[in-house]
Image (cartoon, rainbow, N blue to C red; front, side, top):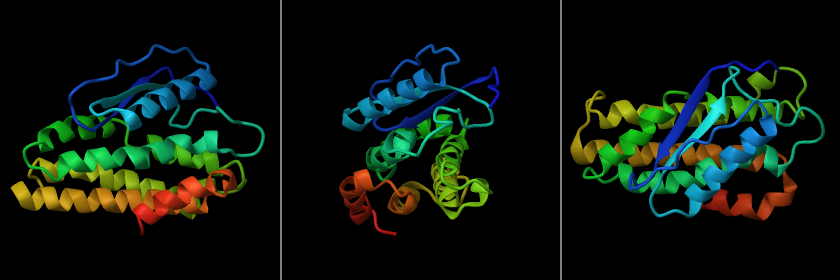
Length: 205
């Protein structure tokens, strides 16, 4: 797959206290995904951070695993996204911290299709025809759309304000996490079944 020369920044705000600086990476897709995994891993254990990762855009995704069978490493970023949304929810349900959450969501919306492309690339390892139309890719597409929709909600452009908007934002985060859980449950990575089962039980659909 041919890389585009454009660079996009994907950010998901958790507490808005600190930020990871984007890493400068070359065209190596392996290094690219390793960089993103590293940032997400730091995000999952941090008490305050904005996820910032620089990725090369090729209308997504990168060919990091063009050969072989799909593994947990091939889709770990989706699991990490689901886990990181726990901290985003803490911010969106509090009207006093919703603006901090918006910083990350606005950045997320600069490249809202990243995770859909990432899921499609993973599914294409086992589905040779029409991976784009696979229902599991649809789960991540819908989850990404829901996350992105929280921007307009918290900006007051959907008719809800204050505590009402915050409550609805929390509901949407829950829905996005549940959809990610469906993806994890159906992705066929048995090596991480215990971890995925724990996530799914915490975020039922």
